[in-house]
Length: 207
Length: 259
Image (tube, helix red, strand yellow):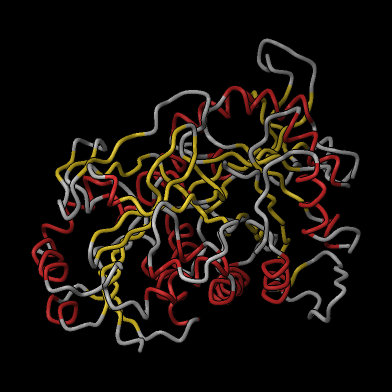
């Protein structure tokens, strides 16, 4: 069953794109920053583009950090996308920002070398562990990335997939009812939509 | 490994695409939304809508096109042409585009690059550059000069210096069009492309001159482009996106396989 999904509104850039993709899939959703609406929804999406520092500032000023913690503790399926997959860790090198600390680990900048920054474009996944949101996904599929920083979870068991760009970095992370993709599901064509659709049916059990 | 991107450019005037297009399937020719959908289904990696209208009434039509495209295709796309200030940028992004391409407006007001990057993020700002080969001089040491107003006005600005300045100001990407190669179908301007691509650390999209898949191979392998813009070679039905991709893949170039 696909129940109502709340897309957390903290003035991030890709909210409406995520909503368009869900509407296209026929999944009911709303963009909201109201704690009661977020807490009463069946699933929650935490999107985001932009800088970690400013995002955390907005989240704190709207008092959404406590709401997000409550969502996660209650077992509600929770999906982070792009910046939303980074600021769920403890700390980000981007502006030396303290983040939400829902998953132990850090966010690092790509080492400046022969590889261009940002990592922009389509890239593949190497799946490290099975996860319900990857059901039926073609292993050769590629996804759209735009980022200069990447998540580095402290524990290997929180890494669901990695991607190669000069280094191997965690491109899907997850723990219990949290799952998060560094790439933009809403801009990754059919395969991205399939993952979103899987999330819209996910009960929050990773096993 | 990161794939080389293939980007299709659609010119839009008064809400319709301007170049004749031949599709094998039955597509409403001239409707940018239908064409975008067709290319999306063929597996293109990204799209660019270039607005070649002038009046403000037409801008509203373009915003409507962007909105309808965004409801139907789920890959990144950018909009260029006629974007003059932050308000224009906001309208295009709010309607669902991923990126905005600025060209003439950026030359006339370089601060627009920095402001756009600050308000919307670097990844949203694409600097469009129209460059033309000239004799090397003190003013134009790279031998490539920037032209504006759709290639009608020379600026006396050096293309290499301008690319670096745009990067410093926060552009997330450069779309580099060669005026000399544009419309020839004889291949991209490789010297210009590798000059700019080596000088900046942001992605460079090569534009102008693509006529066959070999041209894309050359601009990726010999000139280090990160993405290649194509138009007539697919619009006129000579090639499909998947033909181009399977050729490139056979040449050992990483492309996004459409699954």
